[in-house]
Image (cartoon, rainbow over all chains, first blue to last red; front, side, top):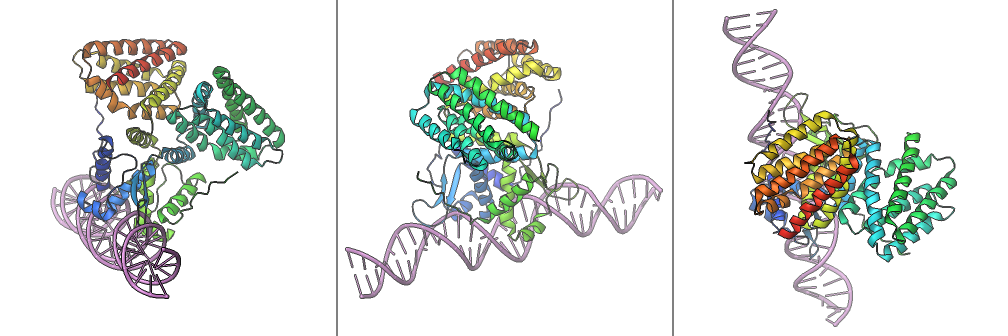
Length: 240
Length: 240
DNA sequence: CCTGTCGCATTGGTCCGACCACACACTCTG
DNA sequence: CAGAGTGTGTGGTCGGACCAATGCGACAGG
């Protein structure tokens, strides 16, 4: 069997720095909340320039495991954090824009993830989350709600439901995938002819969905959310 | 209702650069394969220093939408690409190590994603992929296969199945999630007492799984892969 | 005319040193 | 003791210099 030889590309120092920091994370020596030494100290310790170190830190920042703040005091400097949502969202958004994923793929993924989220939410969603979802629903139902605001609330509704599933990973994935098609959905909604009717139909589904989740009927909720997403799918492919 | 005010934090120039490039991507002005101007040209055009530009490029590189090569010729310079897999893998791996996601969450996500992948693969997986999976299976079945190699082949088996589902997004997500727990699985397998028996059992499941997929029995394949993953889950929580 | 070789231009990668903006800590003053 | 003013440490930015890789192109030799 022919072996695929990958180029080694060991040259770039910032990748070595990255590797060094990653190893510390994997070894548990760096935990969330820990602070890194100041750049001016750390760079010579690692034997690299401050620029190279900074590029590595920037990478960690985009991954969402690091934040940096200037100034003085306990909150300053580079700290290890856990903020995967923004990173994942940006990643999927860009790749979707570049065509790495087709609309069909994204919506299929949404179906899979949100089905699962709804089932899980029906099992053990905290009541506060469902109350908050109810509030969102109420605001979505107001007659003079604009398209942009509706889309915003709609996103938050789905993301909230995913978050109440108790699974941080599927929640993150769900919201990231939802975010990636958000501009597209917004554009499609804006081109809708009978907007009040569309909003009403979507709201009816949302209301039924929330009721099913609250009743613990996960299977039916999953089916409904699948129908909900596939319905939107139809709208999107019509528009584009 | 109290509005949460987020700090604006617009100061950092490399984020402005990033935003500028992202907008071009969203607008379709930058497509996969396009080349950016050389850093020394682009930086003054954007009105920033080369360092700031480079940090933005580094971010895009971690997201997997850009690669940069020095030298001369058509392949040199910074090019827009679509390579989300490495980026997503690194992201999930680090966040899993930091405890953003529990083991339970990851395995639940694997169940959801791989169930879907298997069903889709059973529907329309190309025969070549299944043949390749067969080959992987054969090598996993060799009596003197080491734990590390087995884990490697096992990963490739699952990732291959996901890839043959025809959905690039769920495929990427599946392999990234699988990769994120890969070191853990390796460690668990290394601590197994009766390794040949374990390998045999896993292989038996793999064989049945592939047969079901080949026969187009997606439902049963999904059930089996869920059982397969949950079994491994049991091993992992025992060991840890 | 073809061919191989060598120099060179172009590109990203790295490093250094300097300065800026900000926010807290400290000190001085009333 | 309170407040204003100053100092210090942090990330953020900048410009310039040099290094390394790689293909282009000129040039010499067949």
